[in-house]
Length: 457
Image 1 (cartoon, rainbow, N blue to C red):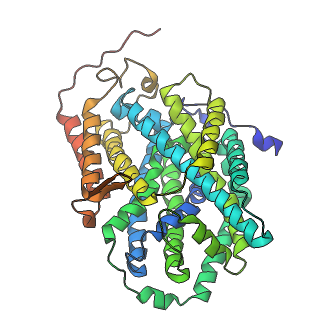
Image 2: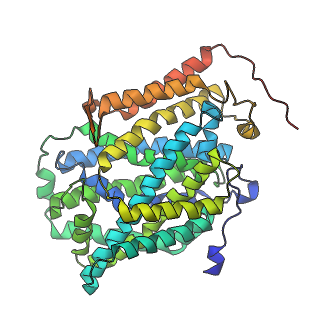
Image 3: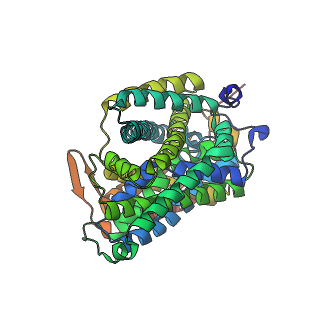
């Protein structure tokens, strides 16, 4: 255990040196497969039904997972090529200072996800203790415990965490997921459930957007981990396939639980009923315990990448101290913030980061020919300084793509309800395509001024 607590070499936001590029295809697959195994993934699956029937929901899950994970794999491949964290990578298309806006958004979303994960784990522990031992609620104690466990993992670093997952946890999680799936298939009439129509309250392509949104929520940190990959192929296929398998599986389980066990899909309290339903299955408490242990890696990834994002803004801050401070924020938030409005949260994430991936992909593959000057990513006044540190053309294209996404899908958050113009057609592919094409066209035909490089020692 003491050896595990020794953290990886602290490369921070600098390029990963050759001797640290150790994650092969299987390592990367295991890491992303484990990140895809989550109660929250199952919860989002509950949003698709009964608006869609189970047949339609399963098709939407498959289509959305293919689209979302191909996009995520592209982000991972670029990260493996350039070997820098995601927010540093965005300095190339947006400018050094232009990357600050997505960095700020990423910090907010990662803090939200880390808090969500800790809350889920605390609620799951409460359900387990009640089912097995009949204990009263110790919610705040569990929040503290799981935040501390997240802190240990985040201080250990991604390479050590991946080795731990590969050795033991991934196999236990596979067995527990198979057990839950088997219990549902044996105890419920799946044929009858498949024959039920949806109530029409959700369109097929809006459901696809909700499925795509989850892998896209990992785009702002995918390079934080793919930079440790041995090669581009391992990063792309390990990331895309690794997250695809559990995402499809857990979305489907969430949809099935709603229809089979009558789990309420209330966005104000979706977790506790689902945990209770799983615990109520044959030996469900044992499966729930294994999934609970596995949930910690999602919280680890969110905290670790939050620290890297903050370092993109303030590179002089120490990585390990940042992790401690972030966990303190997560602890306070977990004690005080209720878990609600997942659906709107996911759509807002998609609106911000789907078109941003379009800008990055067009810049890297079309405009730069897969060649970034890595050292210039860190140099004020260098090749990626543009106009005062911001590539305004790319920022505007990103904003157009985000506005298009929100116009199609709509905005529904507390205090703001705007219906989309055409949610039935889906917003993911249009916003990605428009951002990709606009950035490529404007980048090709815009008048390029010579880059002014400041004198450096």
